[in-house]
Image (tube, rainbow, N blue to C red; front, side, top):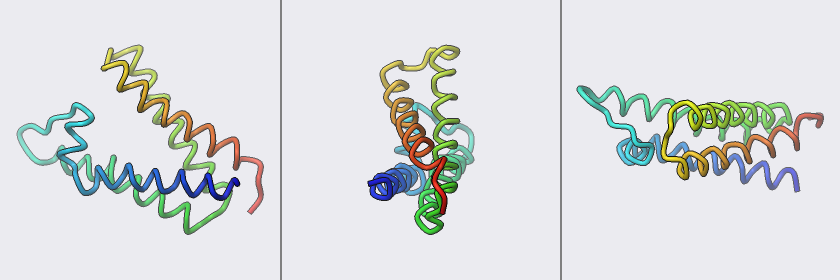
Length: 120
């Protein structure tokens, strides 16, 4: 069961990343970001919202070690923390921010709690 849910989390991570990697304009629009003055914003989306997630998801599938899964969860925990701080500090669209933050928090909780004490 843990392996199956970990794999689903990795595939979701890869899927989220593919949007940023292959469709940076769509992703920028979905995140209310707008590149201006140059295409560097699209490059940043491909890198930080795209490639980083794709490679992280692929890496945990290849490594398969509980600590790798835990680290992916820690990365999601950082994203969720940033998202929830933003809700307080930045007043983003609350429903969208809570949905994204909730997904990140759920993936973080699963990946950390299910894998932190396991041995490879």
